[in-house]
Each structure stands twice: as structure tokens, then as C-alpha cells.
Length: 491
Ligand code: AMP
Ligand code: ZN
Image 1 (cartoon, rainbow, N blue to C red):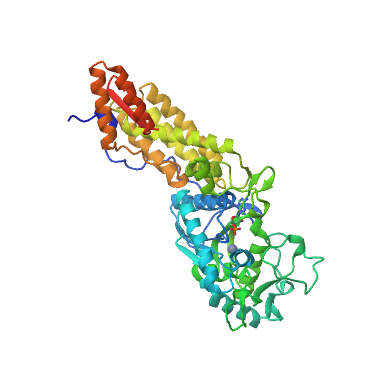
Image 2: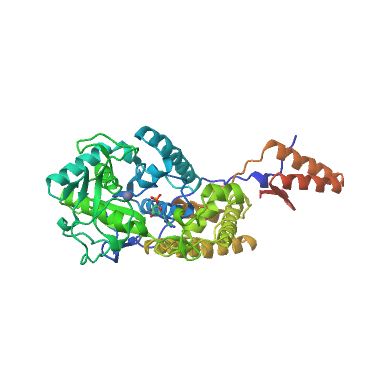
């Protein structure tokens, strides 16, 4: 049986070509460093290697898309560092012991706590995969590092930064002279010796914070040289980041709610411990907001990715698009309208990929398209160099997409422009991860139906041909009759 016309399964004749020449050297990435309060050129400690730590999820429940705004921002950052030619070693923690995991699990021992949290760790990793968030090189669990944390606390004890009260160990903030340097805290009015045992608290409540909590009746605990108990929240990130990335490393990220107390306390513990600067660049993403308020579990105004996919048939990539469409330093308002718009923008990009992969083009090259293509890449990079301005990067992409679509419509795109255009799309996608290479494979059933329809049309049985077209539509394929034959598209 004859196969469908070749327009359907066109393969580019040449492999994706040599790199596109860029005008001049590529620029330097500038990022806003919370520690200095300024936009700075990013210069890693070692010339082409970056050590990066991101605070991971607290696995007491499914993560919501507010959390994922931060994880997507960190993913864009990591992919862009790679785009700039840097090697990145990325470590992320899993907070699997804290007030919330203990409260929600109702666990009374470490084993049952871990059984409970593991479920949500897997769910989180699955969501990350659906959002195309690259896996960190190391994913480290707090409960696998109790000994490291105990060792660190013992050294802080030996250096005189702690005191003990009823079996718990506290960090004495008055003994660390730089306390407050990240969040620019005014320490006047803080009562010496006032303590806090909970993991989360506000700036105005800055106090000595707990490093090791004495075991409580009915709660999981570990036997240790500090006595039976469990770690406070903040110590895990200091212990694990320094263990895997060194006592001074390049980048540490999270959302703005982590600046105080979490990251402030991390700096205090780590620098008191090592006597060295802890992190060189701190980056904090702004929140996803719902009707003026931060999306948060405690406020009940949240959506999980799995709810959006299962209940509203939303494509995870439309969520990714929407989360990255606003630069990370600006708050982003969540609306379903924005997700719908993200879906149609994605479709425009996906459609262009399909046309670029399948259309027959005339031979030769167009100087205009080649120049526009090199220019678009440059604009994309300039936008991203400016503290990851993803909104401007997307604008550069869409300006270029418009030009290429016009060239296609006017039959002005040449065979040699195809590779440059596809390669440019690939470069954008290296960082943004928004579209897939089109699936050009036609499954046999669809193939047979198209042929049946061709026969029906030849026999002038248009009623049957229309029926088959409807059937194909239901199966997810749209069909178009052209001079060259039948074109198909996955809807
Ligand atoms: P958690 O699981 O609570 O430890 O949070 C994981 C990450 O999500 C942290 O970096 C938080 O700062 C961040 N986060 C929490 N709520 C939001 C939000 N509404 N928008 C953006 N990031 C958030
Ligand atoms: Zn952390």
C-alpha cells in the first residue's frame, strides 16, 4: 500500500548546523545579590564551575505552584549558567524533619516519619519532571545527615556560640557580630537571652534560635552526643551545603520568605563554624500571589500541579511558561487567564517548530533571516544577562517568531535558513524548556485512515471522507488538503 504524501513526514536533509556566529563576545551575567543589595556581575570562585545550593521542599504535603515558581526560577538560573558555558554542581535538600512534617505525619519515630515524607518527596520529583525542572546533582535528606548536624553543633559549642537549656541547644545571636547582615535587621530592642523554638518566625521576633531540640513525648527523636532530640530546621542547610559544596560557595537561592529567619540563621551558624564567608551570591525570588496574598498552604489559596492537570486538563508546560513569564524579582499574580494565554503562546511556538521541521522550502539562504536569527539570539542573551529578565527574553523570541512566520507565509524562507532557525529555537529551549521537538511519527491506524479518506475523495464519496476527517479529529489529528497532498497536524 502506498504511503501518505511525503510532506507529512519530512525530515530535515542536513543535520542541525554549525553554531550561529554571534556578534562580539557574549556578555556577563548580572544578578541581584540580596547580600549586597546590588546588581552584580556574577563571577564564580572557580573560573568555569559554579557551586549552587537551593533550599528544597518541606515534604509534609504536595508542593503548590507557588513553591514551583521558585523551583522554576532556580531551574532557569541553572540552565542559563550552563548556556553561558559554566559547569554547575547543584545540591538541593529535602526537609523531612521539622515542625510541619512531624505535625502532619503524626509519626512517633524516625522510621514512620520517613515513610510519610518519602511519599511527598516522590510526588515532588514527579512534578519537577512534568515541569521540566532539571534534577539536582545531589538531593540530600535532612534525616540522612543527623550526625553531620550534631558535629557542627558540637563545634559551635566549642567555639562559644551556643548555650543549653532543658536539653535543647540554642545559637546565641549576640555572639555573632554580623547577625542580621542579609535581612538588614536592626538588632536594637532584641532582648538578650530571648529564645525561639519554632522553625518559622517573623523579623520582629528575632531571637536566639534552636539548633537541637530536646526530645518531646510522642515525637520522633535521635540519640546523639547532644542527648536525645532532633535538629532545628536551619542547621540542615548549613551542614549539607558545606559538606557537598565547601565552606564558601557561589550561589544560594530560595524565595524571599527564606531571607529571614532561615538564610540569616544559616549565615550565622556557618560563618561562626568556619570563620569564612559562607555564600558569595544570595538570590531570592518573589512570590506567586493570589488576590494580593502570597500563595501558601496555611492560607488555603493554593493549587497543586496535579490538581491543575487532573481537574482542569492544564498542560504542565503552560504552568511552566506562566511561572517564568514574569522576571523572578517581580511578584506574579496567579490567574487562570494567564495560564490560558501561556497555553496559546506555547502553541504558537510548537506550531512554528512543526512548520520548520516539515515544510518544503526553496533552495538557498536569505541574508535577512540569517541576520534576524543571530540578532534574536543576542537580544535573548542580553535580556537574560540582565538578572534573568525572562519577560524580555520571551519578547525577543516572539519578535523573531513573527518574522519567521511572515517569511514562511511569503515563501521567503530558504532551505539553508531552516537549520539556523531550528538551531535558534533549540538554543532558546536549552534555557526555557518550553516546547518539544515535534513528533513526526504517524501511527499506523491514523495512516490507514488518511489513505481510506484519500480513496473516498478519489471516488467522490465526500460524505465518507468528511466522516473520516471527523474521526481523525477526535483522535487528535487535523487534516488539510493542499496542492501537494494531505497535511496533518497533531492538535
Ligand atoms: P517549603 O516547601 O515551604 O520549604 O517551600 C519551598 C520553596 O518554595 C521555598 O523556597 C519557599 O520560599 C518557596 N515558596 C513558598 N511559597 C511561595 C510562593 N507563594 N511563591 C514563590 N515561592 C514560594
Ligand atoms: Zn534551606
